Length: 282
Image (cartoon, rainbow, N blue to C red; front, side, top):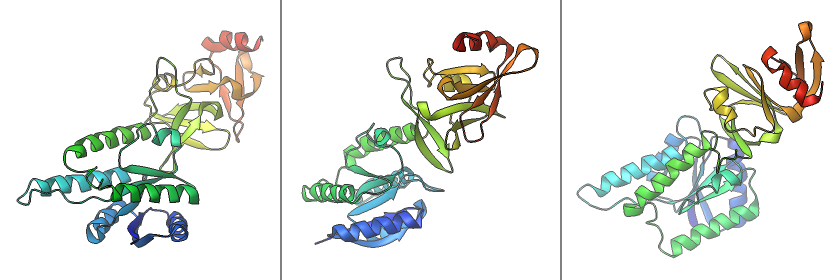
C-alpha cells in the first residue's frame, strides 16, 4: 500500500518538481499540496498523511513553526480526556541550505532533501520513512520524546537563522547570509566585504548581496577569519583576498576597489592606512 503524502512549499516549481520525482519513485500517493504553513497544519489534520515534505523557509509560518504547532495540539489532546497524543506523520524537510547546516542536528524522525531535488535522494528519504513506519516508530515525535525533538528543532532553527558560533576558538568556514527570505550558507572566501548602514549589515559576495543577522560589525568579525578579513573603515570589513585594486586618494589616503560585480570603492580610514601599507608593502 503506497504512503500518503503532502507537499508543502511556497514555490510552485518546487512542488511540481517534487511531485514529478515522487511519481517516478512510486509507492507514494500525493494526496494534497499546500503553499504555506497555515495550509500545512489544516491539510495534515484533514488528511492524516504518512509523510509530509515540508519546506523549511516559507512566508508567515515556516516549517519548524508548523511542526511546533502540531506538537502543541497533540500535547493538548493528550492532556485532555482521551489521554492520547495525536498521530504525527513523518517529516522530510525540503531545504535550499547546505547539508552541513542541516546535519548539524541529526533530528530523529526528520529527514531532509536539499534543493534542487535529486531523484536518488528522494527515493532514499521515502525508503527511510517506510522503514520507520514499518518499525512502528510513529511515536518518535510524540509523548516523552516530543519535548526532546522539539528542543532539537528549536536549536536547528536558531542555527539556520543566525551565524554559527565559532568552535574551539576558530571561526566557521561558512556564514549564513539572508537573501530574499532565504538563508544561504556562504563560504567566507566568497565574501568581498561587509558594510553597515543604519544598523543593517550588508554582505556582498562576487555574485550576490544579502544581509547578516549580526547587529554590529564587531559581532560579525568574531565569526570571520581574522587572517582574511580586515576592518578597513569603521563602516566596512573587507576580505583582503577580494581587493581588486588599491587606489591612492587625496592627502595620502587610499581607497579599495573590490572584486564584486559593482567593483565597489571602499575608503580606508586614516587609522588603518599603516595596516594597509603593511599588508601590501606600499
